[in-house]
Length: 113
Image 1: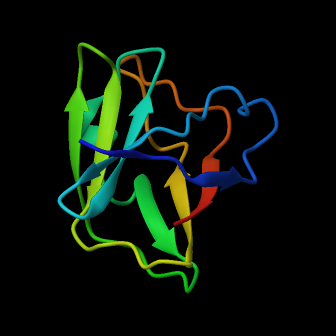
Image 2: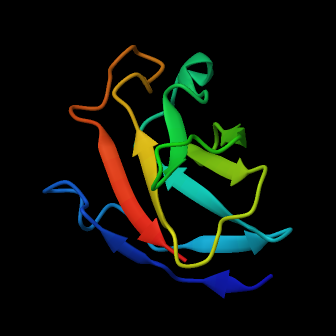
């Protein structure tokens, strides 16, 4: 499995050390892995609350996998990313912990392949 690092910009203040540049290459697509510090409510992990958007504003179709043990969400696009195109990973405040707590603010990560 090949690792590829991408440029991450526009990370909200305070999140600089929390957003990791670790994308794994899988079937021609890059997979985002988002690790949290508390267990999540799996019903809040969906394409409305966590998604990748192209520079044109189109949401990319993706499948999700949540590992309760590692508290990690894996977001794999169902279509390949285009080269030299800006994308945005969005994690909204609607992603909640098992206790019902939301993120304090949404996270948006800009990346380019």
